[in-house]
Length: 132
Length: 131
Image (tube, rainbow over all chains, first blue to last red; front, top):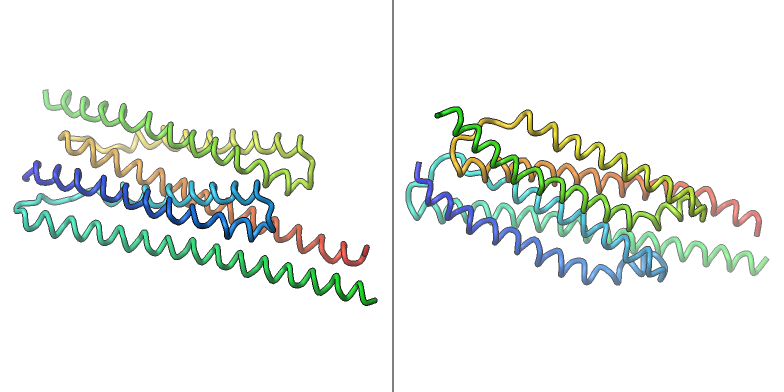
């Protein structure tokens, strides 16, 4: 078993995966504040808290998965194999990251839609009450 | 010689894993404790003291559950035979812990959302009737 190539693989994979997670999370949650404030009708405190809670969950799920799939079970013999393994791992992790990004986006858009529906319903109810 | 080297690798792995796992668990718990306080105040409809008491109980339960899980993991740890194994098994167990925490976290947020929805549905027709 050629250990040095495996160590190289780990030391390339881990920083790439962690930086990728960090970058995606930062850009996602910097922009999601707008959604959150909209969902919570401008109540900024609870909106920012929700944003932070989602951020914690996102980091946990993605860094956890990145660490979980770190293990390379059989030895790497050549440089070519190293590159292939690395690209397989990093690619798989990026796909997972993309799926969880879209899941979060879906939740944000759904919340936005629900809150605007709710607002419209209360507005209509208020208007009907006003007419009566 | 052989068994002592196995034991040494395992002890190295534990001394890396335990502080990291405890730090992550406690950091996530405190973050949820601080950010979830607003939710609980809203769920308890403004009863701040009750909300804070419940929040503290929730934090305590969370810490007991997860630190207990972390400690129990050690007894299922495989024997490590190389320095590389230390990294691999540490990262695997940390990954398991973090995924578990993440899934629990999202599940909790789902439950909070459902309770909020229930309260809103209960309150809004009443409000309309009163109006």
